[in-house]
Length: 259
Image (cartoon, rainbow, N blue to C red; front, side):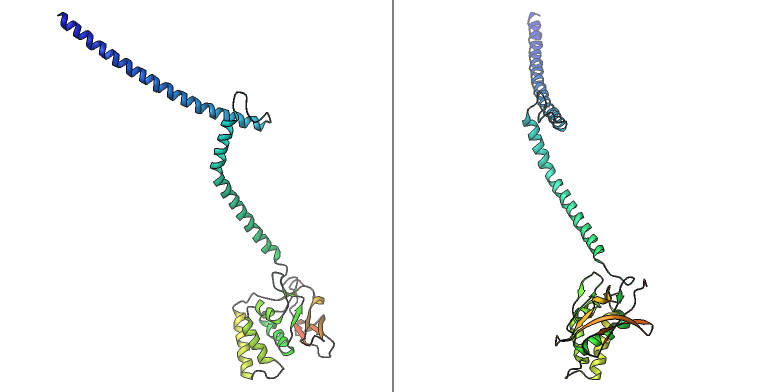
């Protein structure tokens, strides 16, 4: 009986020791966890306090906090945010450039048929290019495309209307008054080619905002033909180009639709 009583006491004692050890381990883990949590919370609170302190101008660090936690947190935040910041900057820059692009393209358009004479289109373009070809005109002023780019040569005049430089040159060679020039068949074929080119770009036109600024120059450089005024011809104004010679080739124009 005494033996069994001692045995029971020993078993109970061993169990109590095991529970005690487990309790101690749990307590240690709990304390360490609370310490870590407390440290992180302290860092978080100090970071917030430092930011508020800087915002109100009270200093870089709040009372009871060090600057290191704030700066490390801030640098981490800065590092984390650098990608999004760069993306945002890139997006903003892209947006600005597209905005600038659309703005420049919209403000660049200076001329339209309502406020400028027009010298292109299927109605008068061939007549004008025929004059350029026969007189071998080399340069010109006062004519623009819809975006405000000045047209300074017959080739540019043709290209603005959708005609390739090669097609215009073939047309000019066929109609040139300087021998050798093309046959009647060459003239017809090149004229039809120009019409086909212009048909693919029907909205293109030549704009003349100020008649007094128009001039064309012949290759000898001696005759600078300068436009002086517009007169009626077949229901349309014709801008006559006067020069040193008696021969005055007309520049066929449509009046502004705003007139």
